[in-house]
Image (cartoon, rainbow, N blue to C red):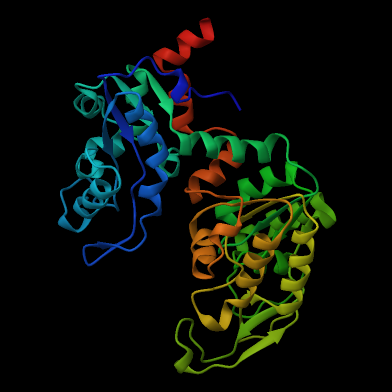
Length: 382
């Protein structure tokens, strides 16, 4: 992965104004932030810039206002929290209030960077989007990756290029189609790929198992069959599942429906929802033996207490592992937080989609833009 310019590659900043693209897309409920992790994650970059005499103005998106001013997506709660954590740092209005942000409109970029001397991208979770505030400023301003972005590139790039072995990857989530490319990318580097979540049922169907009413992508069966044939024993599927019987509803325990442990042959009317205890133990043993672990995607619907056991078991195995552990953001990070295990993992990525795309492709639009910045080009010529 080609090196991106870091903070040390910026010109002297004393008395200069720096535009910081942060990812402050935090959960807000009733005007209150419920988790300020993403704001706190930007503090090392902010402190570095201010220690060198720069004045910092941050910008972020929040939610999906679709190019219109929408009070539901006001950054005011973020602005207040940022003022507490980093007094004196300004915060612009929600970038996505302007349609030019998602359209990567040059006129919007020009307005955004007016009066600034340098640009720093620390928004890893948005760097897989070719949006104006991600790819526009490096075209003209000296630019760099912030500490958070640089660390994500170092860790996730290392999984692709030189992982300690054995390298065990764990993938969950609902659809094979959403993760086909990352499955193929991981099979290029991982020693074992453990598959749970809703997408495991399409793989089980490809092996000839009846899957009842479980989540299923019929159009992906041939792809799953191909992957199983090519990877052999390196793809590890559940050997048992926790299923919900007829009449039951997810997230509604009072609605009825029996919960039962089944093998890989699921009767009609039953829905596989989580990996079973045998599979959870097997996955845990494989994770324990690994020197590198990457986990992305829950093993079941962990938000429903009846079907959290598989995801909890994987989360605990990852947190107890002796090897280097990486969790790819999104629902996996939410599960770690729910189970109180986030501080026992070596690296929790701040971007679910961005982390998967970086593993798939080895690059992101935001990283490519930084490598084209004026200071990066000058460094490469020197």
